[in-house]
Length: 350
Image (cartoon, rainbow, N blue to C red; front, side, top):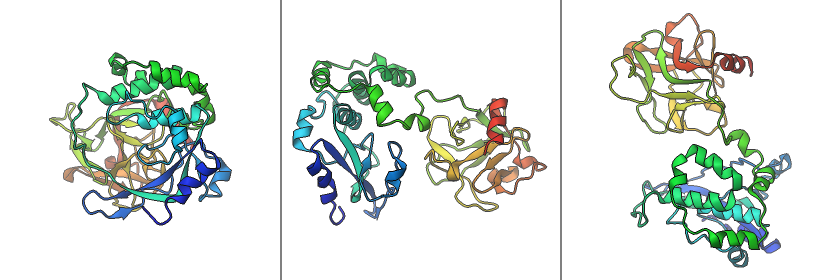
């Protein structure tokens, strides 16, 4: 913990015992114990313009991370504590956050308290429960607290509906006893801007599938299941190109980023210079270095921040950034499927 980490957690609770306070959680490296700041309090929702003028003041937070927070013992037990039906981990941060807000409390983050956390690379303990315990936990939370919004979860994860949630009687009694508000109130008053960034039903992508080179139609962009901060290039297309394996199924999302269909690692360009590499980086949904456009007339992939286009050298299986030139075949790409009208609208809008 950093100097004076505790007073900023306690002060809001002293003013109102139904306030829960979360610190900023920094990272202690798993291997070296090196300490680094994770963020400066990325505010995803419930932040008024006035809040941004006073970054040192606590600000409303819809959902906690779960591991580090300060709460009055009185308020914790009035809320019924943690749901004892939740197994091991996963879901408790949502369950407690929803209870706090919907049952008359408030939750804030405070940047004046910073606490380091060692993130494990893997869970060192086996699951003593049966089957998908995380899915079971999420279903319990959804069934008790999310009302009709639970259907959005089941649309994304249909198998959750077949997982027994267990006895929910005591949890529903807590909600009734405390006269807790409906989840729609939470979405309208607390997390009102989250659906703009994380819509319950994600709009169809404007382009998806393979990204095939026009300079050599047997080659496709392939991220090969690489991790963050790693570059990638071209490989034989799996579909009709002789490639045997790889990661060649991509999505150009409504957020204007590009990532493998099954992973949230986005195409990222941090060096705004000719010959700069393209790397994979955890999708942050803030555009910036992950903001792309597809030229509907040429198929070029235009990187907005650098004003450069994705180029390639097929003989070396390399991709890189270059000055945009539609006459260069190596800058032209063909997606598996595209929505031409959506691409035209995207291209016309800044």
